[in-house]
Amino acid sequence: MQTKTLKIGTRGSALALVQAHETRDRLVKAHGLNESDIEIVVISTSGDRIQDRPLSEVGGKGLFTLEIEEQLADGRIDFAVHSSKDMPTFLPEGLHLSVFLEREDPRDAFIGRDVKSLADLPLGAIVGSASLRRQALIKRLRPDLKLVNFRGNVQTRLRKLADGEVDATFLAYAGLKRLDLGHVVTELMDSRAFPPAPGQGAITVESRIGDDRIDNLLAPINHLPTSTALACERAFLGTLDGSCRTPLAGLATISGEVLHFHGMILLPDGSEVHEVTGEGAVADAAQIGRDAALRVREMAGAHFFTDWL
Image (tube, rainbow, N blue to C red; front, side, top):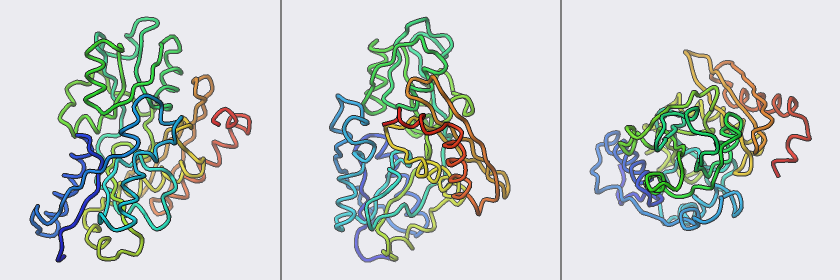
């Protein structure tokens, strides 16, 4: 099908590499290729190198994609594999998210060092999280807890927890499952009370717009229900201009031909929360997400968003 070795760009964390290998394996199976036909290229990103500050202070989630997208744009790699929740709403000119692999469980996982659940943490316990969404949700449920910035890959955060730097942390259950670390979870959070980030649990592939050879190669591994759900969630995110400075959550699920959406926006301290739901035909996924965003924006009022800046 192709005459030269394909190059997949990815971050170098254990989870990123697992996701790149899963993408390669699916392509090998779909097209009868050999593993040697697809090279995995590890690219260091600013987001990986900057560990001492919250991403919201140094440029947002785009820091996990900048260097990878530069190599994609100039042709050094053929496509890139990402966690969907890490992808900014607006991509560099000439690039698009062409396919989504089947989504894993999107829920957040609580991991307690000495307790089993968020409710069991003692007053004033320390919880580590770098996510403003998780921080706001934690503060909403347990305003007594002390929150600290908690950067690093999955293994780094689990080590910090084991070393006693914090009493608990939260990680995406999907990533833990992909790393065969599901056993460390002490509580799975309910997706209504503690909704995930848009795109959480889904692997996406980014490619060049108009590169038909690559997009035709990728098309067979696209999972339509996942790409439909993500169209809704990313439309919600984009209409609200979501970034690392905006605590918001959104999850779309599909039952038959009907898509159901639940979204939430929060003030960073969790003191004010607005929720919205929507449903409709799967063909209208993006519009359902946009409409939900407009309704929750009107619900919250203009004053709400001044605190996001």
